[in-house]
Length: 273
Image (cartoon, rainbow, N blue to C red):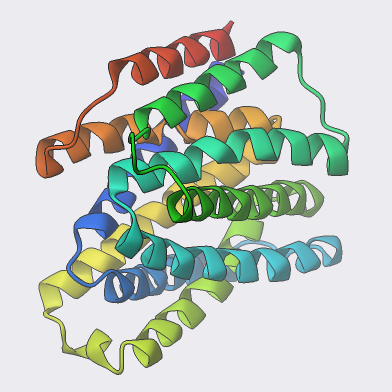
């Protein structure tokens, strides 16, 4: 992977970890996600106005990905009620790269070199080790984790192909998150029975700012997906679990598994060779 792509995606991974950690420690995650959706909308509208309209070939991907992002966002809120961050997040993100690798090959004919495939596998294995919890990773938790990974794989492949067909990745991303953000805010308003409008200004602004940051990260990822093999981009993005692991250890007193971190770093080194 070229350094000009590697570094921005690594930055996006850090941003992803930041907003996921904030969502986990938020008192009401549904309200937090609702204001993040509002942040997506506010961030996207000016860009959608100034950038070219999406091509007709990309609209079906925008529509399908909008649905996928809304479903995943609500699922994330639900899953974080059931599973600890140190377990849930690595399961979500760790299972996604391999699913994306297979999906991009089957549906798009996208192939990688042996070295690139091994880099993805090392990152994936490291992520799963980081999230391993003896006695916990069974039944429901495995279901939540791999279902989340499948959702990530679906919207990633949709976004990658949609951005490629649109030719302008930022135009695609701006319309996608404009369509995603406002419905997510309204869904949160309804399902929380109006509690969205009763929180303090500081908390609501924190949610909006987190939404703007996460939207920025998504825009970087979609830009990278438009020109780089999806499996590689996904694996690099999922290194966000490293930061989440350290956040969980510091704020939640959860154990850091260094063997997993070493494997992730080794996978990153292979990715840059």
